[in-house]
Length: 299
Image (cartoon, rainbow, N blue to C red; front, side, top):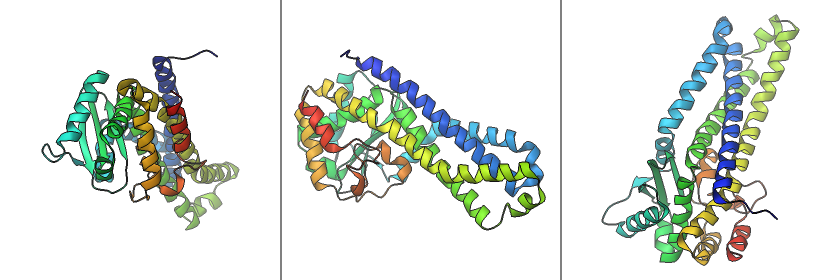
């Protein structure tokens, strides 16, 4: 069987990510259009340009500031240069070994073992780890997890993963607003006064509002699962010690209790799914932990 290189996989994932981000943006565009169309009918003439302008502004803002939003929503605080000296040294050493600028390092006060990387490029990247991860893992295990997150940065996964996080969150909010307004009769008068076209538009809008959260969740699955396997392999390529990462995953599977309360929109950013109930679920944003361990021990 033909083997593909890390660079081939990175290029393939970039293309997939761009396509998935476009799909989410299209969903958002039509959802926002339907909100304007039904709730503010007098603005229907400018509904399309308003929707387009909003998506462009929101996507650009997500590109520039999405990482700050993610760090804020997870409660991450910048690592203390004294209290977290070992963590900072580990991040610095692995970053140099990987050939990327040293990312900013953050700490989340939480007993669960987890971490994530975010940012728009290697020059503007951040890594956040939980206090549970720092206090529980051995040196080699911690290096394995940090190398995995640094690989997300080096592979340029972080931009698209962050964009998807912010766009998925907005899609869920907008869908909820549309459904709520429809159930409360917000679009009933417009539908009743209009002809067949209005009814068709109403039905399409309703279906989009119902299925958009499902579709955007599927986007998260597609973005996350293969990227995690690639980051595992890339991280091991840096540490040269697969057992460190495999052992870290075993401890995480055993000890995590789902204590990190974060939105589903950002769950795919984490090293493992922060929701305990879905760690090995068919519908989780991450591949099964046991499968990741198996692949690592076959290296």
